[in-house]
Figure 1 (cartoon, rainbow, N blue to C red):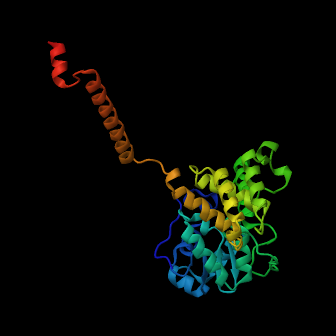
Figure 2 (figure 1 turned 90 degrees about the vertical axis):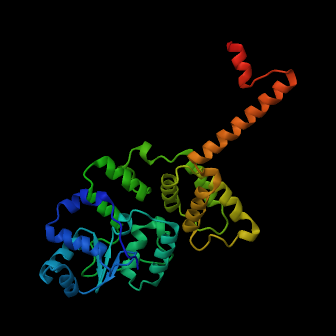
Figure 3 (figure 1 turned 30 degrees about the vertical axis):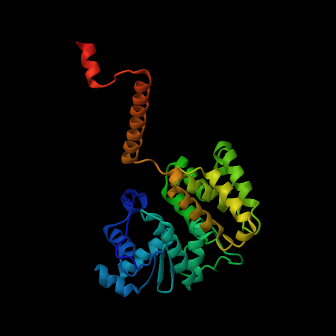
Length: 312
């Protein structure tokens, strides 16, 4: 269990947060930061304990959680509460954390909460597993589980139509044509080539929507990396006979790890000021050595004494 939580500064500029009462803000922030919440954003707790720890009445707690459910901010299954926006409000998502999240999700017993996490974060968890069906709607669950909660959240919170389209496009590129213009739906030639390469990997679970979304996400997270070159290298490596079994369990996690390791390699590292100084010193030394040899060859005095004589 982490000893601290990170919350983006934009949290307080969210129209949903701005519209909450002071009690609701306290409860929402409590759910995000209390010691009962794990890294998936799931906590198992009674309403009475929440009331005791926040100082709110049980009536206010029940009413406010009901509001969070109706606005698709939380999913409730018995005493378990899932914060749908928990993961995306963390300021850093590392490879190690992603592996931790996947381990936690595998151990989670609530099929309802697991379904919502798979649906809300396809780039982290690789999309819904084969054969996993949407859970039947319970008393405390948000409406219409067939609609990804991230999509519902954007529809409710973002007033600017262009921002809604852009974020929805990144989340689910396959949404209907009525949402986007042709230019917004269009994939680049580089993206098409990467998708083609991924589709040709024997035995790899290829998913056009999930793979395209991940390509775009990784391109933003690792701008220095030549994505097309790395996908081509990854495809060639996976195609080798000795590596046929690699990357089959969770292909998108494998790809994230590959790109992350590439970003840390020397070929994509930006030279530090110290590296630049060392390199420049080397150039200067080479130039001085060249000048010395030329002076010796043609009998030219290039030292300070010669300059003084010329000035005199």
